[in-house]
Image 1 (cartoon, rainbow, N blue to C red):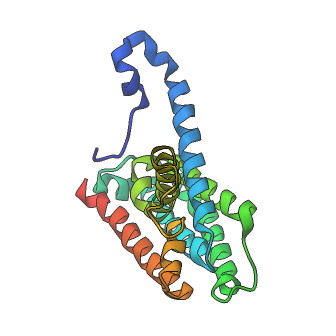
Image 2 (image 1 turned 180 degrees about the vertical axis):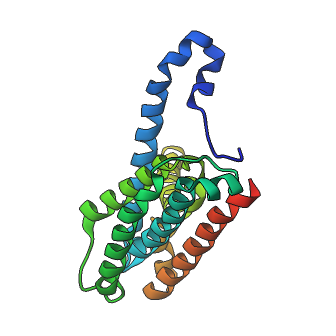
Length: 217
């Protein structure tokens, strides 16, 4: 999809033309799922000093670029993406959010002097998901928020495998030394700051890939 313009009504196509009037139900369900998943991913990622804040800042900056080009009729036409009038105004809010993340990271970097907690991480993840939905880049979330996705999956796999092996063998077994994934690397003896730095690098690579898709799609 060159324009990344997913038409939710196509999901109801097998049920006939009349079913398309209920597209709003599908849309609400998908939006709830996206916001819950990304918000939970940010919350799970918030386990090491500067990890959630740094990766979130990278995602927010990327969304700012996507929001700007989507709201500019010249850039959107050149890139072949959906033109969303007024989405460029989101750059003001995104700039404020990015500044807040960087300011917080100054004191949250290892060794942390302040901590985000569930209230901050859940809200941050919810904002990132909402921004992605507003600029119609839902399909890029698995790439852009890849760090959150992997952290989420590591917990799901760990818990599921533990319960399955406990029923089958009578004792629970683990895939990772500890979940979420960043604690697995910590248990392997890698220093906290090195884990965070590497996760930032992965986040930057995913952000660049997300932007590059504007020309690849």
